[in-house]
Amino acid sequence: MTTRPIRQREKRALASEIAQAIHMRAYRPGEWLRQIDLEEAFKATRFDVRSALDELAVRKTIEHVPNRGYRVAEIDLKTQRAIRDTRIILETAAAPGIVAGIDAATIARLSELADRFSQAVLSGTRIEQSEINSAFHHLMYAVSGNPVLEETIWGLRDRSRGSSVTVWSSHQALLNSDRDHHAMVEALRAGDATRLAGLIAHHIVKDMIEAQAHAQPSTETSQSRGSEVRDEV
Amino acid sequence: MTTRPIRQREKRALASEIAQAIHMRAYRPGEWLRQIDLEEAFKATRFDVRSALDELAVRKTIEHVPNRGYRVAEIDLKTQRAIRDTRIILETAAAPGIVAGIDAATIARLSELADRFSQAVLSGTRIEQSEINSAFHHLMYAVSGNPVLEETIWGLRDRSRGSSVTVWSSHQALLNSDRDHHAMVEALRAGDATRLAGLIAHHIVKDMIEAQAHAQPSTETSQSRGSEVRDEV
DNA sequence: GGCGTAATAATTGGCGCCAATTATGTTGCA
DNA sequence: TGCAACATAATTGGCGCCAATTATTACGCC
Image (tube, rainbow over all chains, first blue to last red; front, side, top):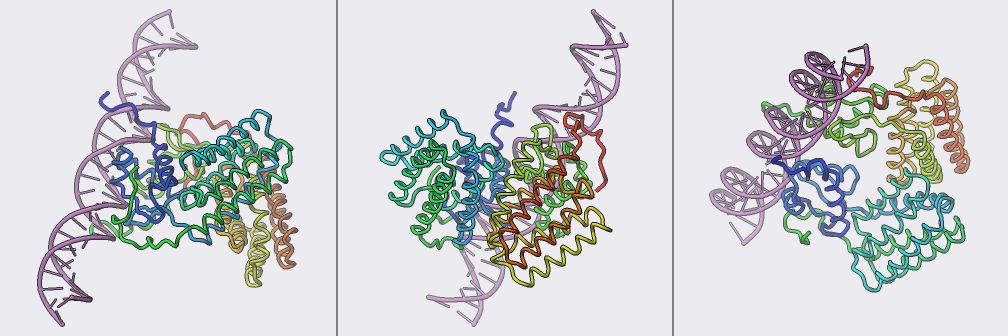
């Protein structure tokens, strides 16, 4: 009875928490994730931290360098494009399944999320924007009828998120995303899979091109550890 | 100097070794992977075994049940179909890139691998067949020009391999695979991406339908551990 | 003063121990 | 004889320690 019963509960959860912190940009691409810092920041034991880090390394959210540690993956342009192309393949391929599997209630919820995103564009934090956006796409792909496709899509999204894309790089990009969401809902109402696929592809391309255009060439890669800027979690 | 210098080397390798053992069916779907057995079989420490097991669990090759252990994932028909559909999406989508990126030398090597597979069909172990087959597809997807697509494909292939598909379930299926390989080489020579995509889709569907037809309904799921048949590694 | 080199500090990572949990075997009771 | 409760054995999994490695600082030489 001495140890609290929190035992087995949050083992996997920590990886998600760290992942979220990363794509909220609390840790920047190229930055080293020191185990001691994470222990304190997340109130976890060293063992749990290491497990979580290993998991994220397998998922390619972070990169592991033996005897150096773990750092947030830095995605070069070539890989960025490869992820983008693969996402387009998968997410457009999901369109027919979505159209086939969707019902009125889900469309209504998607429409509501699109509206909430519109609001968040005007008066919302980036975290809110990001979360509503995630919820929208999550819900949409959830009805595709193919769980494997869904999780593969999500894995790829998470991977690019870790790097540099989540936060919309310009207000214009944010407005475009907003418009796309409503257009997708419209396509769903019309039962038009082809149009939906086109919108999805456009959505991905637009986001990632914007992100690339505004991304400053990072010079932090070979920087010594410990001296980087780091936001508090 | 007391500890041998094999230290950092084979940490990640162990996961691959175990994965290979699994899809060579040394451990069957639903079977529990006891850590002690793995320590001895692979001459590794308990820590390394656990790391490898965790990695495979993240990759969904095996399944983790808290306080029970790890077991080879058993893929139900629905998931099997979902994997198949997703594989078709990805692997057919790779066809244009393959046609665009391939050169004469690679075609020659693919042709050679196809020939070696033909030989292995007649006089080769299942392991040889499986390895040559892997090499063929690996080489083909490697020239797609999209590394992310390539590794996503491979992740999905490995996942279904763990379960019940690798070893061709009938001699007819094996002959079909063999024929497809040569047809793919032909399509590549002709530079016909559409035909290649069609062949790939056919290849996947045929394999997995055969595998399903011959798979006996497994009753080993809820079996007690320790009493199962287990081949030596 | 710059630079190569040695001493020191900080960090990662391998590993074994033991508690918590689950499976197995046994005994007693209806 | 069947079944339930208990005792025992086997297995998993959390965690802390310390060696190995790498970064940083201090020193001395050119």
